[in-house]
Length: 407
Ligand SMILES: [Zn+2]
View 1 (tube, rainbow, N blue to C red):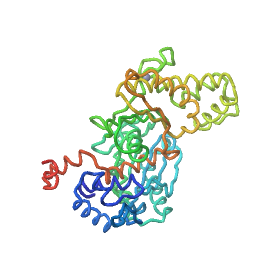
View 2 (cartoon, helix red, strand yellow):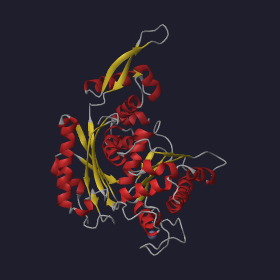
View 3 (cartoon, protein in one colour):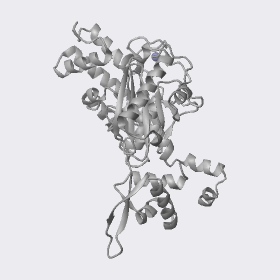
View 4 (cartoon, rainbow, N blue to C red):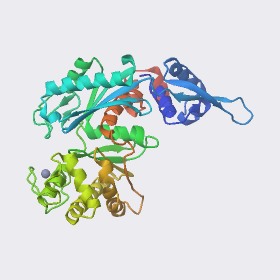
């Protein structure tokens, strides 16, 4: 999708309420002539439009350029063991249509892929957009994945999924380009794309879904690790006296802080009545309702979980010297009052670098479709973001433009 310089210009326009060519040259460091040429191409492609003028002193009014939100779109598929969420996203992050498919863990991969394909078609039809404007489908899958081959390997919460070539199978079924990444990586991409002012910064996204993982961003670049599986924190111990884990330790994140673990503890402690919902999401809602109402057993479980999340957040924060820790996931609106209260304060006060800089602990601004928005963001990020790696590829392809930029 164009050169490195073009993505730099488009990224600047995208993050603004409208910029003139003069401002773009100042923001990007490109020459006025380069900006003029790039803007001509972006206008011809329909990616930006001229939107009003701004007066600067006595000079000629400057024409503002703005992104055209519906010029290109992306579909996001979040494969969570409890639910598959599919969303159609425009360039401003608006969800134009979405669908949910229940319990993929009960579906074998061929049936799941057929159902996902139908949902992708349905959101494209529901959004009322031309299929040729769809850049592609991003898939956020539970780890471990094989990033290079686009394979979902053996996720612990999807027992029938072994080495499923989901990227290629879904591309064949939909006829669209497909990108596959780990769920927490997609969440981190979404935060750099939509949630942050500018690309800079070092942050972690603590994603609380069926499992708990972190997406990592160092100096504005998402960190995937050597095989796409960075961010596995499920076996960090947060309670040495906690329940035994299949890994042989006690009190791991996976068996202490995962929503299903909280619900199990609540049932055993009698904090959920016999009439409580049998599904994790429903039961978790009742547990937090009980805590709100002052039930002591429920309150203790929720407070212990918040303290565990704070301990986990502190480990991750110190490991990478974060400036920002973002929390989110499908249950986030229910968890937030407890997990961001005392817990966030403990992270801020406990970091090794607390005398040097402040750490912001905050909830995601992306909302309930975080997973699917993250998946769609993978596609937008690959198409439109200016990464230093893109510059390296320009050089590899021996582009005269890239060489002159480096010279
Ligand atoms: Zn463990």
